[in-house]
Image 1 (cartoon, rainbow, N blue to C red):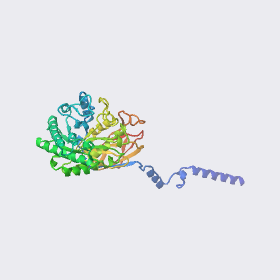
Image 2: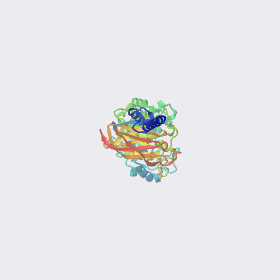
Image 3: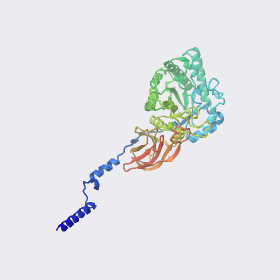
Image 4: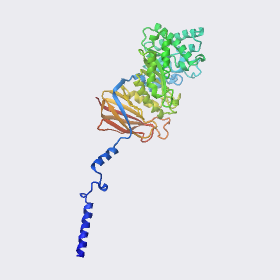
Length: 479
C-alpha cells in the first residue's frame, strides 16, 4: 500500500508539471503567460504614440509667390567689370531674377556718365560694370538714385537747394542711361537713417530725406510722364511708424510713389531685427505710407551674423527658407539679397571671389528659386520653422531646416491637400558635422519619409548631426 501511494503521488506530480508546461494550460492573469488582450492593445498604443514635433500645412491659405523675390544686389566694388560676365552667368545658374544696380552705398557716390565713384573712400582699384554691361547680361534690374549730397546740407539752405537740383539732374541721367522703358524699379536713396546728414537727429534726417524724395519724385513725374517703372522711397522696416511720418510730410508728389524699399536684415537672436516681427513690420511699413500703393521691394537683406549669434555657411543657410516663407506670406513683390560675393561678409555670401564656388547660402537660394514657386502656403510654427509652396494643383514642396536642434521626429499634417506619393526626399547636410560653419558647399543625400493611413508624413531630422535641411516634394490633389 505504501508503494502504491507513492506511485500515485508521483503520477499526479508528473501530470501537474505536464499541464503547467502545456501552452493550452495557461492562466490568462499570470504575467509569465502573456498580457490580457485589452492591456496588450493599450501597450501597443503607448509604444506608437508620436513624441516628436507636429506641423500643419494649410493649402487653403495661400498667396502667389512673385518670382522677383529671388534677386541679388550687384556689388560694384567687389565685382569688377572684367568679371561681370562670369558673375552674370553664375547669377543665371543660381536662378537670379532681378539685379539691383549699382548696389548699396556705392549708389550715393556713383557717377552714371563715367562709371566711377570719385568721392567714395571705398572706391575700388578696378571699377565695376557699367549699366550697359548690365543691360547686355541681365534681363531684370533696378537702380538706386543718390540723395546724400543734399542730406549733408542744412535743410532749405541755398547749398541744400543747389544740391537738390543736382540730384534731380542725376536722376534724369540715370533713368535715361538705364532705359526708362527697361528699368523695373527706381529707388530714391539708400538708408537715409544711417547717413551722416550733417550730424542732425534721426527725426531731422527723416524730414531732410522726405523733402529730397518728394522733389525728386515730382521732377521724375514731369520728365517721364509715361514711365512704367515702380518709384519707391527708402526706409527702416524696424520703425514702421516713420513711414506714417513721411506720409504726413509728403506735401507733393505723394501719388507718384508706388511703394517702399526696405532693408530687411534679420535674425533670431535680436530684439531690434527679430524674425518674429518681420512679416508684420514689412506690411505695416508699406501700408503706413500708402495702403493703396504698397509695392514692396526688400532691396537689401540677409540673415545677419550679428543677429544670429554669428551663424555662418551651412548654419546661415538654415535660416534662408524661413525668410523666403515670411517674404512670400507678406506679399513681397521683389527682393535683392546681399552680399553676392562672400568676401564682403564672410559666411553669408553667395559666391567666392571669382564665382567658381557657390557657398551654402547660395545653394539653398538656388534650390528655393527653382522649387519655391507657384503659391506659398500657410504653415504652423513650432520648434522648427517649415517652408511650403504649392507649385501647381498636384505638387507641394516642403523645406524643414533642422538648425542646431537635437535629432527629432517630424510629422506633417496636411489641410486641404491629399498626399498620394513622395516624389523627392532629400537632405542637405553640412560638409562636416563637426564644423557646421565650415566654408564649404553642403552635400545632398537621400532622405527617408513615409506616408501613413491618416494622410500624414513622418521623417527624422538631424539624426546624423545638426544643421540638416530636409526637402520633400509631394504629389497629390487639393481637397
